[in-house]
Amino acid sequence: MQISVPVTQGFLADKFGKYAPEADRYQGYPKRSFPITLTDAPAGTQSFALWLIDFDAVPVSGFPWIHWNAANIPGDTTLVPEDASRSGFLTMVQGHNANAGKLAHNPDSLINTGYVGPQPPNADHAYTLTVFALDTLLDLKAGFWLNEARHAMAGHILAQASQDLWSRV
Image: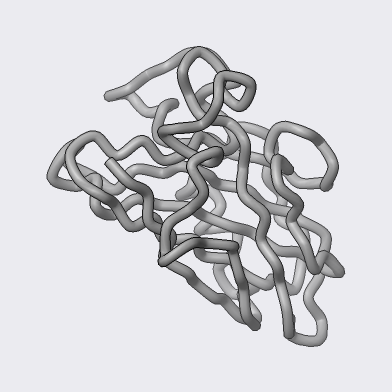
């Protein structure tokens, strides 16, 4: 399986992160998700799950920052379209991102669930997108946590692919 996100010299377009125009923000948070092309999914793929994690956030926050956590993307999907997280153009169930955790504890579901774009505070960061091809739909409800997805996926991963996406400070 392969995934591809359009980048320029490894960097995401500004509209997906810190320098997004106001129309693509909600209360200052970038909310327009980037497109993802999926190819060569294995036979038997019933659904996809994805995680976007900033491991470069550890020195800043003390832990990897979850920017997007989604599951039950239909198994015949070849393109997760731009702005899929907030548009509803693609069926999926979206989980909490790191803004929902006890340290950030943002109670607004439009900020703490679904995609929230990169906003590196201290240096350019690499954001790791991982897409999983699964042999089932997961029993997850909107607002699930990453650990719940991880446990639900156990024994159901047919393939996975990752791409690092950089964002500027």
